[in-house]
Every structure is written in C-alpha cells, then in structure tokens.
Image 1 (spheres, rainbow, N blue to C red):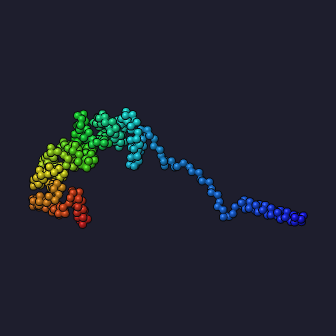
Image 2 (image 1 turned 60 degrees about the horizontal axis):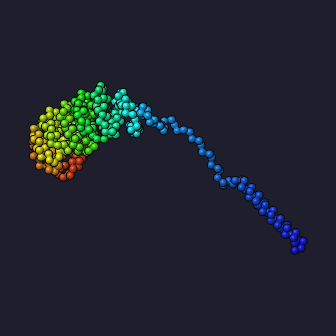
Image 3 (image 1 turned 90 degrees about the horizontal axis):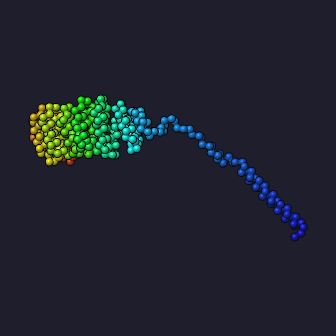
Length: 359
C-alpha cells in the first residue's frame, strides 16, 4: 500500500473514533437530563404518629384492673362480655382466695354477679362442692336483696343445672326452697329465672329441673312465683308424683294465675299421663269460675291432644256459653291437623294478631 493510501485509512479510522466518542458523550448527556416523560421519584412516606389515646386500649390482665374495666363498662354490654372473657382467661392461674376476697367485699350488684359467676366457674374446673357452699353461705349473709339475687343468678354459670347440682347433697339441698320463700321479690324472680334457664338447656326435658320447678311451685306462697315456676319447664319428663302435684294445684289453688299456669303445664305431660290429665282438665273446666283459667284449660287440652282433642272440645261447648267462641277458634285451628304444638301455637298467634289489626 502506498504512503498516500495509508494516510487516507488512518484519517478515516480517526474520524470513526471521533464519531463514536461523540455519540457516547451525547448519550451520557441524555442520561443526566431526565425527560419530562420520566416519572418523578416517589416522595418519602409520611411519618405516622401513635393512634389516638384509648383507640386501641390495652386491657391489663390483673384481677383488680379487669374488675375496674368491667365496672366502668356499665353502658357497653359488648365491652363487658370482652372483659369477662379476659377474666375467664386468668381464672385457672388466679389464687382462689384473691378472687373470693373480691366477692366478699364487692357492693355493686352487677359487678358482684360477674365476680360470683367467675367464682362458680371454679366448680366447673375442680368439681369441688365447697365452691358452691361458699356462694350459698354468702348469699345467706347478704343483707341487700339486690346483691343476694345477683348471687342466685350467678349459679347459672355452672355447666350442669345448678338446682340439680345443689339437690345432690344435704348441705346444699335446701337453698332453692329458702329462696322461693324469701321476702324479696327480686330473689324469688332470680329463682324462676334460674329454673327457666336450666330447663332451656334441655329443651324443657330435664327430669330433675322439671320436678324441682313443680316442688318449688308447691312450696312458695307467692302466686306470681308459683306461676312462673310452673311455666319454667315442660313437665314431659316429670314422673307421676310431680304431675299429681300440678293436678292438685289446678284443683285447689286459691289463686287464678296459679291454676292457669297449672292448666298450661298439664298440656305438656308425657303420653302415659295424658288420659288422667285430660280428664282432670275437662272436670275442672266445668267447675272453674275464672275466664282466664278456663282459657288456659282449653289451651292445655289442645296442646295435650292436638287433633285428638277435637271431640273433647266439642263436648265442652255450651258448658260456659261465653267460652264457646274460644272453643270454636281451637276447633278451626285443629281442623288443619297440625303435627306439632309449635305449629298450632304459631297459627293461633297469627290469628290473634290479625284480629288485633282489624280491631
């Protein structure tokens, strides 16, 4: 290659190098200057302060603090349920005497009921009857009827029906008998509430509860308490002596509300007691002077017999002409041949509601 040709190629190479170098500088310059289309870098997240005071209030797990939380939660049942769950959570590790001291010194009936319920749960954990004996002893010493009633209600915290549990030992057997004779209405109401609550656990078919309710109804001299107890439980599971006692109350009680409650209760007897009970109801209808009780007797007959009660009801027409309209109502409802009492009662209530709307 001649000297001139070499110079030419050297010049071309130098030019190419210069072009490449310039392109690199230009590209580097574009990288340093962001385009308007390049998104701006995200701003740093704003610092978050602590949540407002009391928004996520921590609940201390000490007994004293939790009891005060419960006390302050009077207007919030949901909060009180939450605090009770916390109390249940510490129960197993809580020194018994520490809890009992709180029960002994508490003056607020609502807080006392919660604390006593917590104490009664120790019986569920240990099976120690001394737990319940302490409750009965304190209730017997309690001068305030509201606090005594609270302690009676607290027995609902037992896993088993409390009336049955207490009836198994001589040292506790008389508790409910004393309470249904208590001069304070709130104590007697607590007994009715307890038996109603216990019966509901077994759909009204717990023999011990049914028989206890009947026995207590016969013991009390207060007609409202007796009527409440007779309505607390189905007596389907009750044995003959208890059913006989209810039939006796229907015949002999001087209080119409007790006789009415007895008539309705007799509508729930078992099949083996049905024939004698139907006879007792029809005989009483003929001699009964109270319209309220006669209406309850008709309900008891309809419930006891369902469709088979039709001929019995038909025979009662004319005994008391003022009740014939009520008898016709039951006969019309029974004509649909309902399979259960609940269906018949639903239809009866719907009919009465419709009449009330028209009136």
